[in-house]
Image (cartoon, rainbow, N blue to C red):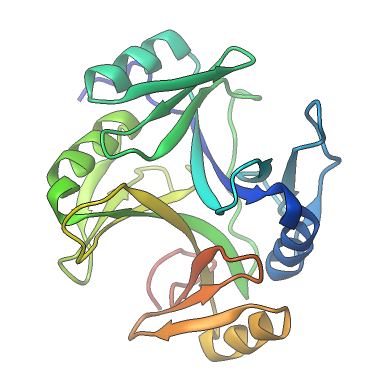
Length: 249
């Protein structure tokens, strides 16, 4: 697999309807325990959640749509090669924002080709109770093979089987390489590909109660994870992974 145009860093964006912006920002700052950057953008529509150590990877954007969503920013030093790589793998252009190409995966998930802000970003796992460290890409069955191949090619990461057959992890050889990427095969046969954030938590039951006190709702409890809904509607999961290692405890 060629490394030309492979991202050096990934940013996970929580895209929030504008009318729910303040509620969502307050929720995620409290849920993660991270500080907020100053707003930026022509309408103050962007901000970053700043971890206690290391470089940031979680950002938020206010959007005109009424449904919350998730998208990824792929930082590559050679953006032209990165765009060519994603298009040759099946991506299609969506629009351009201030010279940033916004793309869609073959199954419709939005992502952006961005430029790195530094030369050697560092992912610090230093928070023992919780960390939002993973994006789970949710893929209908009919799109599974194509999306797994696409995201492996675009990210330069190797697909690895997880504990159950409906999951594949894109393995990063660098333990400090940043955001984890998990692919999930849905029971739905068709539909658009979507994504949700996952938090690794040390004590899932305790953390569930804490999130409920912040206004979240428990949607479902499973063997290794709990599905939650943020006050403004965003679906996310609390997982039994160790926040310091990222691995299942």
